[in-house]
Amino acid sequence: MRKSSLPLAASFYIDYHNFFEEILGEILTDILIIGGGIIGLSLAIELKLRGAQVTILSSESHQAAATAAAGMLAPQAENIPPSPMLDLCLQSRALYPEWIGKLETITGLTTGYWPCGILSPVYEQPEVTYNKQLTLNSQWLDKDAIHQHQPGLSNEIIGGWWYPNDAQVDNRALFQTLQIAAKKLKIDISQERVEEIIRSGTKVLGVKTSSGELQANHYILATGAWSNQLLPVPVYPKKGQMLSVCPPPETPPIIQQLQMVLFGDESYIVPRKDGQIIIGATSENVNFTPGNTPWGIQALLSRAIRLYPELQHYLIQEFWWGFRPATPDELPILGYSAWDNLTLATGHYRNGILLAPVTAIMIADWIEQHKSDPLLSHFHYSRFADSGAPHH
Ligand code: GLY
Image 1 (cartoon, rainbow, N blue to C red):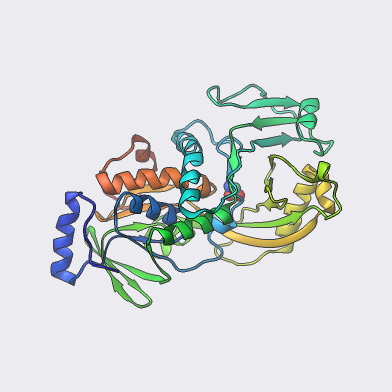
Image 2: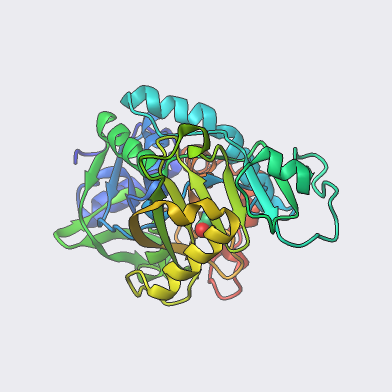
């Protein structure tokens, strides 16, 4: 890491810079991002493209939500009620095509972004079949229409919602693309576990890692489900187990492929363009207990086969699990913290892949220009009564 060249003009950094140089010696980077998951990487790339000097500290975790997810971009199928959260999710979904285009241009890789729409079939007649979110594009399909729309659904399905604007991305391909983009942009990524965030009053003084201490002008906490191991933020792990299958080789191409995501009761089936099908996900409060369980896999398979019976003949490829960063109100924690030079970007729960582009832009605006999008005010840390956070 080099000495900061302070490419960000924000004057509030200058004071910290002088303060730290007096107390601790050299400032090593402008912005230190703790966490190399989808949020940390997306933010690092956004800030770097704006001219900042960025370093990521990442302790590799294969159970991070970025790789465990299915990559659904599903504000409508997830049934998020009209709220600032829905607005945030819709903004992010709209940013996706351009954001993906930028990442694919930087890296020359593909991410499997696919605006395939999401179908939400049901087994029982719902109370209302009119569009509850009038400004959003959705359509109720009756029994005949839904079976025509997606052949192969269970006979038990009596209808369902079609959300043509919901989409998907191959989250593993996206994660890899973000890692390569960060390397191409010469973002410093250090595989160091942060052991402590050193604080004094309302300032962060540095971070203690497995190999020493590091300082920066500004810090971002983006450690997902592991966030409260470093700071008292109400984020806890919600485990999700998943598996993937693929059609047997002799399947005729005509019936081979689902062409849209199926979002059922407590389960979803996400077909990738390459033929792989992801089946997810359990939702378990078991702390960081690792592993796949017979209960979890049985539940996933029975729900998925009930929804799309053809799956019972498919070949099992892989099982895995991960930890969603859940918060008490299931909303992310974004923006200022109780420490003047530390910003929070964590707690994205079920929607981290979807919210990556909007989080990167809004948090970069906040750090770079102290510009706070009005939507951000709904996601501040201070909403938790015992947060100890000042109200900015
Ligand atoms: N977004 C889907 C899940 O968290 O399982």
